[in-house]
Image (tube, rainbow, N blue to C red; front, side, top):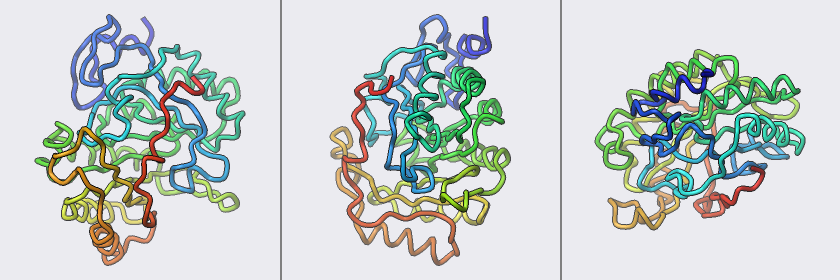
Length: 303
């Protein structure tokens, strides 16, 4: 039994701690067995500019998710409805293929439930010449113990910080303990990476943590709490990306105010709050970014 098999036989990789034997084909909250399922692997231009750069980020979209937010834009893959089963060896080849295509980095999207297999694939790929930054693109709902398995593998952490109020987290993601784990995870990410390191010539990030927060319609107060915590705790050690690209999806119709987009006034209130408390290191989005163009086709490209 290899290392990945050990973790898969009694899965506690995420805060759900399902204790299922994924090695034997059982599935827990993420709906995935131990077999790697990947929905897309391609150059991706829609990340923060220090990640996408001119050529694009080498984004690998893993199927399944430990969150399954009611408003999810990537519902087809988060619900494990699509994805091609591959080996860790094939995943290592995908990393190298993306590098050859000119990717500035390897961007692991929703990777939590596959951390052991990803580490195995990275070991193989690095032996074969993979030498670009590794980005861990996550919901933020992580276990510190799992993140520690990634030390030395991940250069850039790109977590969400979705919720402050545990009741909102319960209603929208069935995760009332989200904030507790997101705080602990962020602390570990910052410990591993230290401060932000940007290549002065290219403007690309080489190391550090960028925390994303998607402003939800009707939830300005929660957003302000999150921004205050992030800046008050970490200051310029991290970058904060305040996003207005919330896109109403059919499954969220009729839920609270999630059937509409974020208004300009709502988004401005959050950004103004960030400026008032001294946030200088990060990203805001201009108007008109809420669009389904941010949702790629999960058609198995590059897999």
